[in-house]
Length: 249
Ligand code: XBP
Ligand code: MG
Image 1 (cartoon, rainbow, N blue to C red):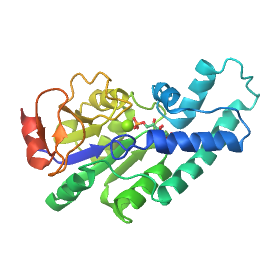
Image 2: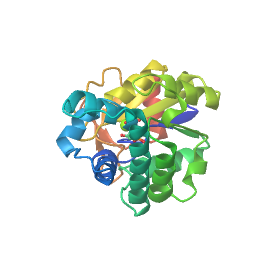
Image 3: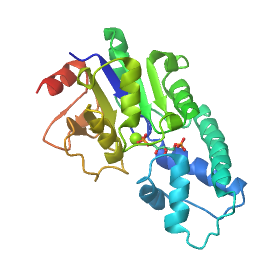
Image 4: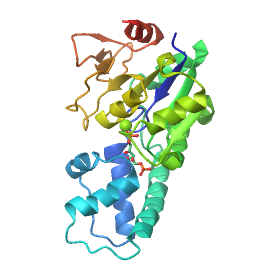
């Protein structure tokens, strides 16, 4: 019996990475006079590491052997990340990033059916509320029983901690829930917490290994623009009836 749907944010509810987070990171780097510039292809590689602060440290370690870290490098990363969050939330407030196909439709159906909604993401809490407010509805952060985000767990995806935290707060067993993810790191995190997971791919994650997913889809689909299933020949829209079929199969 399906009781709750847990959504990832970045890449799942909206394509936030290339034209959102990446742009905000670069703006922060410029603000700090750094010659770091993440183009769309490099950013795809950096997405191997989730979390903005973790991603910046990974960039320096892996791609900038020439960069001499100042003694207060950890503080610099924290400061850079604060400024990046400001750039990112302003971009969302300016109406920057639309939801992916089918997201609003499915969330509306879930609310009407009286099921529970939750979020499990590595991104910063302010980013979650900004996206929900400006791309879903002004009061939509209240639609989610639990918003699990950012540094509330030290180990980010692919670790299962964020999903475990969300399930614990919901007071639900994984078997009563389904997760929605867009990436291998996200799928591994949800699966690690025992959750069945529906994957909607995007340009950065299309070629990831999604073994064990309930379904791998182009998107959630709309009646006039059906999803394409990547793991078999099928098109449709993801609604509660279809989810229940998949989960019982
Ligand atoms: C999303 C992320 C996030 C964003 C940046 O991963 O990795 O770090 O890229 O957000 P997922 P912050 O969708 O798997 O949760 O800069 O706020 O960390
Ligand atoms: Mg994601």
